[in-house]
Image 1 (cartoon, rainbow, N blue to C red):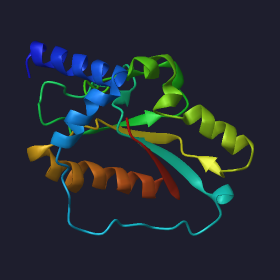
Image 2 (cartoon, rainbow, N blue to C red):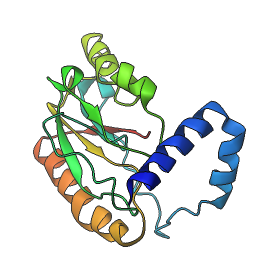
Image 3 (tube, one colour):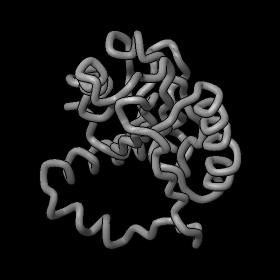
Length: 173
């Protein structure tokens, strides 16, 4: 994707954020990918106050030292980034051209509410937070859907299970 296209995407994201009525044109034209399968809902097996929780976001947030998501590929980047919950608040970047993240750059909790979850943990609402959380870039299309579902998402699920996570909070951007 050219620099001009990236600039265009960022400009569109800012305009439709400030003028939501314009967003309707994009929403109407968008056709989401559907698997045709039922949503695999899994109710928690214990009270939330006893659960270990992890965040998974499609906001494109990552540590500054990690490789940015690939914004040159018009079909997106199906990879993920492991996020260290202990340090992300002091060291992050957002690599995503398809939404206006200027407010999230000022307050990470808008897209990745880790501090709010830490408060809920202190209050006993949730049992504990995982040390590692996960981030994807939320614009995946075309040829990358299969690798997102069949590889990246499966690897994150495997890691969450290894970390004995009971509940995942998904945060879109």
